[in-house]
Length: 113
Image (cartoon, rainbow, N blue to C red; front, side, top):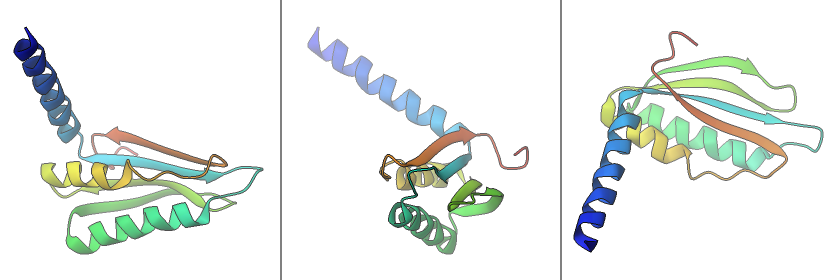
């Protein structure tokens, strides 16, 4: 029974990874509020995106809006399916201070944004 449960967990994890690869872009929202803005966290996001852009993993980077306190709304499109997973893995672990809104949402592409 334990092996059946382990197999189910492994297959469920694999299918969620495949689903994430279907969307090739990530919309990123980073905004400050009345309490301030996490500039170091925002710099970590920019640094990771700059590295991936220089590496060729990003095919399109679109600025949707800029925040008055810093940050903004961006759409980043991966060059390929493997790059989409790399992009997601590079951004999801970043933790910003509670005073900063940091949202990631997977989208099909940046053209519609």
